[in-house]
Length: 105
Image (cartoon, rainbow, N blue to C red; front, side, top):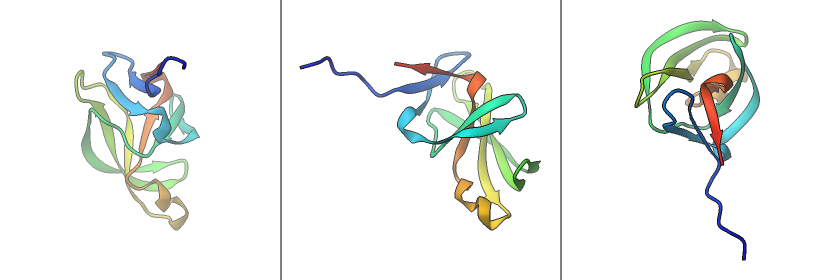
């Protein structure tokens, strides 16, 4: 039998706090202002900032910044509300910017 390998994790680039599981990636085809980003079904060990409306590439959304619980760095955002029907699937999901997370395992 081979060695058991734990789940592939993503951690905060700043403090290495675990924030997401690879298995929770919904899409790797997202863009942020500073480059690629991943859409996750949810994140852990984070807290959300204040809700605000933002005009994004795919239309108007209500979003809240996602911050690392340990070091408070902004890692991405959560979609709170999508105003266009074609974007509703994003509601409640989290975008983490690729340059702000480190893949472990």
